Image (cartoon, rainbow, N blue to C red):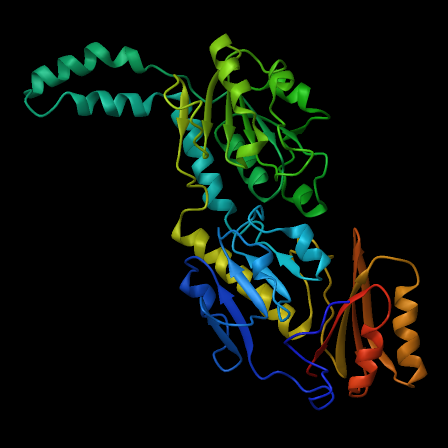
Length: 412
């Protein structure tokens, strides 16, 4: 069991059901002001030096065991990836980890669109060439130099080419739409596509049954999958053999999805025509037909604001109501507040847990008004609304049940 912390406390030194008057949120990195303004000043203490926080709000800060405090209940990442958070360890402690999928989707989509264009037309080389001409030439000389050398920078049109999109979530579906708008044939592959993503996907996108077929038919391949055990090294020496010769690979998802030595070998052999990524790697720097941006995918003011607002809203709903949206380690659980007092119980996902919790309530003749129970992997989460104020002893009895991780009480 993990000790119950802030939000609501049933410590015997407090009145039964007493509510902590101020939630504490510790921030890391530069969180957009619009997000911070979502926390009501009369109920939240927010800042980078807040002690004993109920929640953490981060961007790229690497979190570890040292950030695990008895009061901590949730962590929100203002972004999609959570590689900087030890999710497995935090799950063991009953800490909910949130991310903000889709909040930066438009920002990444626009950068991918720019990469497609820059990889097709040697715009960068052309700009550098003109810049190298200096300012000493008159108009006629400059014109002749430009006209004489422009053939060096001839590219290809995107229209009529085939774009393969690996991962059809918030970003991938937007990229697929843009490919269609550019007149490209668009192929998509995502074995784990959600219902919402499927609805967003244009009907003109051809769904592929396997990666091999997508690679073999695509002039451009763009990656938009999360970094998981199954996607680490997705592009490797074996999968690169399936690529259409001269194809361009774009990676604006996660660095480790691509094995970079294999990419260098494929470029040298002519299997790949180019590599454009948001994650510079020393073994690829300086190679022809390799372009890197310095992790700019979500680096727009709009994306930073969207992520911060979304993360803040999720933390507020969780801390005040126990609802969970967009968690990477807990099930999505939402229960409208109507009446009564709310208890949240986190437990290991083993048989008969809910029955034991409800038996404690029944033995004390406490009526359940509404409830929801869901599980994800090894964790189960329950929201239970009851008619009467629960005594401290009741909450302690639930907390004492074997495999219960934590118990929280919310104000009506």
